[in-house]
Image 1 (cartoon, chains in turn cyan, brown):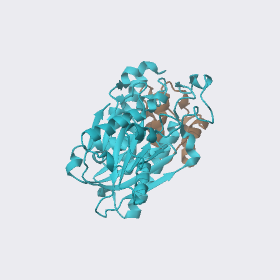
Image 2 (cartoon, one colour; image 1 turned 90 degrees about the horizontal axis):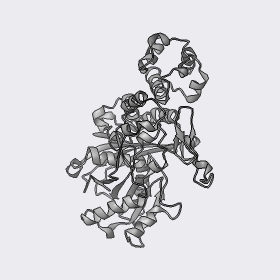
Image 3 (tube, helix red, strand yellow; image 1 turned 120 degrees about the vertical axis):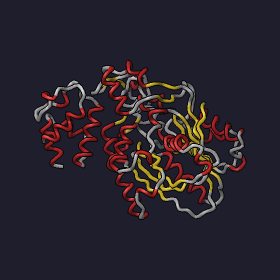
Image 4 (tube, one colour; image 1 turned 90 degrees about the vertical axis):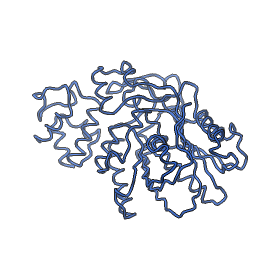
Length: 342
Length: 73
């Protein structure tokens, strides 16, 4: 696993003046939600830029053999283009062979798990031995600077996870659910074919709590999303424990998506999982980069230890879709597990 | 009810205790914002194992109204 983060760092406290709230209110918010710094891509930096940079790093360091790649799966919600698929653009820029399958998946905070599911299906075809799963987003470009709900938590970046068949017969168990009836709880209203971007969709308007955003910006119904996470994720964890006949002590780590510190803390409390087993430092340090937070969590919190040890981990993601997912996985020794700057 | 009002007061930072009672029009408190909303939702989830929605908040004028809605869930 490799994480690629843009160098540029933004600090929550530096941006307090952008918000339509008193400094005191915003400072309190920052403390409770755990807002610290975020990695934000420079204007013009795209998802393919971050992915190509990371892949070239792996080639150069002899951590990945270009010829061995059978498929490239990219999970993003901020693609370079509507079409072609950004994974095709990446394959082209890396000069991958014509036998390499590329595909994009449109998923956000559960995108690591959904991407893994796709990777497993490709490996199961029998004709592909190695899948490159790319998770990447530069969604900060779609968040209003005057939106105190979403701006302080967004982050950009990419992660690269190489998946291949293992020799042991350790089972991987995966639970995924989706609720399309709440699909618009997290959305960017304009810019697609339903509502193309126009000068009008770019006009900032104030919502009832004093945030300014336009229809081109990401909007999140915070209360709905919070309720969804607090209800559905513990339910699914319990379902996993019951189905697999294990309990919470089974796992060495719970590596979950990290929307913000507050939400994950509440989730840990509710599931009675000790904080030391559920790292909660990614959103404060790097921001919430959608589907990259889980692999980034591995790079940040297990890091080099993953090269010589194996761990029983529970991956968890939840967000846009709405989608929620958990995976029980024995993380075998990794060939690499680090973070680099773009 | 007493307990609920106490827990609600604990979420707040800048509001005087005597401003908080069952008749408090909580959404009109100076301090009321999206974060207090989130913390209130979390508190109700923790203490009462109930989920309150945006609609519940919209349709409750006072803390008593809100408490009644939680009770009826």
